[in-house]
Length: 185
Image (tube, rainbow, N blue to C red; front, top):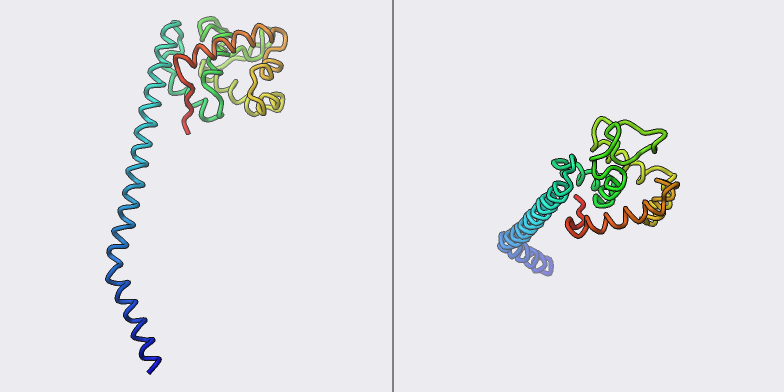
């Protein structure tokens, strides 16, 4: 008899679960739909932010008649790829080549210095090489840890570090006023 009662209770619970399963499924579907809507909203906001950043960056570069105008996607992508501020990269390019106006061999980042100037296929390749160099090369380990422009300057341009620090710091702040820092994540 006890077995029959226990069996009846189990069958009753199973019937209740079967009856309520569609509502559980609906609940899961609603939760999943909410997550999808939230993800879509976040993606939409990210695209709006990216497009605004890109437009502001284009205006900034155009204001200096920079040949980099039109390279905004690549510059932002390089920043994201190497996890480095695009405003820092552009500040270096401004110090080293007036944002690509005065350069040799597409080297707008001053890589190699006056005596050993590296050549690149494009100005954007120069930016990417510099980003990779300062974020992966062991010589820049201190900068990689601190993110300090001073630590970067000690390796990047030791002969004129003080002037370079002042220029990069000033231009980075100027760029960030017009183009808030943005990384594609």
